[in-house]
Image (cartoon, rainbow, N blue to C red):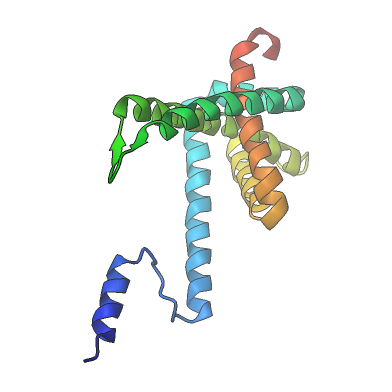
Length: 195
C-alpha cells in the first residue's frame, strides 16, 4: 500500500511553509524580494503616519538624536534592558508546566505582553525622529529638506543597513532600536532644552 501521497498531503497542510521545498530558487528569491519590498513600503508608511500624527514629537526626537546620540543610546539601552527584563519575567512566569499540560496564568502573561507592546510602540514613535535625522544627514544641502523626503531616504538607509548579516543584525538594528527609544524618552525628559 502506497501512503506517500496521503502523507505528503498531511505534511503540506500542517507545514507553516508558504513556498515548498521543491520550488525553483528563482521563485523563492522572488518571494523574498517581494516580501521585503512590502515590508519596506509598510515601514515607510508607518514612519510617515507617525510623523503626520505627531509632528512635534518627531521633530523633538530628531533634535535629540542630533544633539545627544550617545545619551539617547544609553537611555534606550537602559529602558530596553529594564522593560525587556520585566516583560521576559512576566511572560516566562505566565506559563506554568504541570504534569501533562501547561497552565497559562493570565495575571502574569498579560503584563508581559503589555510591557512588550508599550516598548515597541514607543520605539516606533522615536524611530520617526531617528529616520528623519538619518535622512537629513544623507540628503545634506543638495536636496530640499522636506520631512517626507527625509523619512523615505532615512528609512531606506536604516532598513538596508539592518539587512547586512552580522553588522546589521547584531549592531545596526539594536543600536537603532536603542537610539529611537532613548530619543523619545529624552525628548520627554528634556522638553525645555530642545528649543
